Length: 143
Image (cartoon, rainbow, N blue to C red; front, top):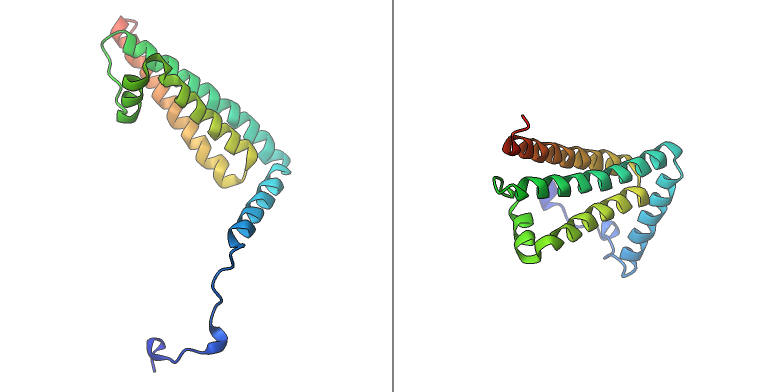
């Protein structure tokens, strides 16, 4: 008899999740975060990465504004373009808040998956800032 046609064994029935399951998941996450923060290497790297996320966010904002101020560049990211249109010069606030939130997340839960992922994010944002500075340099004739 195949497994699909096997009768259901009442002893193998699983109980539905308890209402306190989300609280248990939250507690497990908090415990894991606390454990990760007690790892000296991970914690130290997390603080450096948090600072890097804020710095590259700032560089991205500055390089974007420089390139756009020349009139020869356009914002390629449609979400940021909408923020710029709606918020004017205040578009930088959500961008910096996002980077601040990422920095907080890295410091609060410095497990290796978070650190590697956010290192990649920092690298991509740095690449975008370098590209923006390159666009600015090309437009103003510095190259």
